[in-house]
Length: 328
Image (cartoon, rainbow, N blue to C red; front, top):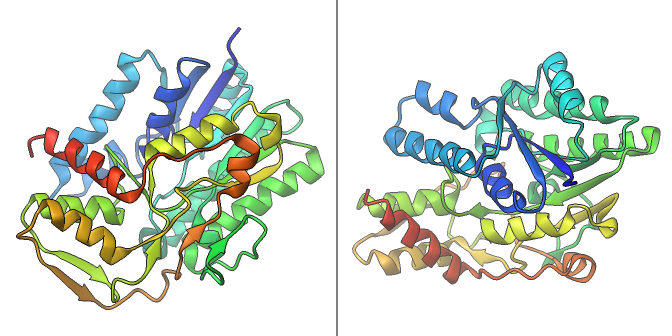
């Protein structure tokens, strides 16, 4: 019998890609309110890309339905409804992805960010305590704050800036506290600078490509020398797949990234190489965005056999090719 996995926030960018990957091996159940950075939110707010984003979000739902992955529309902040769903499914593994997915948005709307990130996590932790259910918690490279060295490892001190990174780190500590008190098992994932098809979160790679496709110039915050460990979504999904049901991942933290940072101006140069008429300008840097860089993935390679395949040039090529296939 296949093990059952609940993906909380499973209709999101990471979640729907993960569901499609896991379907072959597990019984996958998606739980999502479809509100935060999803159909509900984008249907209500007007933007230049509203129609595009609603189309992409519907593509996610269509892919899940075509692959017979059930979608339960439940607000994970509702403890009673969530408990009832967990009792009916009796999962072996839960992946917590329910959260506001953008640091700047978190700083602008801290109440909603805390509400969706921490309340959903608190509910899950309380529901699964005392049960033999493994939790995979999605954190972020933002927990490290300003990187103090060339490559940060999972053992380096965390000193987050702003609401988003602080909430993610608080979530990590809460997950670990439940393990200490109730012997719940967990794995914590720290991704970085994700990009890839059907993303609507306003991440830098997405923003650059969408602007270029519309013949708009690119704008870089700061001087372009800030570096991020850009990670194509397929590499992240590979890493999570290696974590699930793996004894070596129990009660561990893993950086799951490409493992080699690139400067923002390098990303801009890659994008403009496909769109030569597009210019690049610079604006003031947001001081609440930490100075990041490369995350060491040595632990993931050694313990999990993780092998990322998409350097930035390859990933951006795939990403732009996909965008062009949409005939925007």
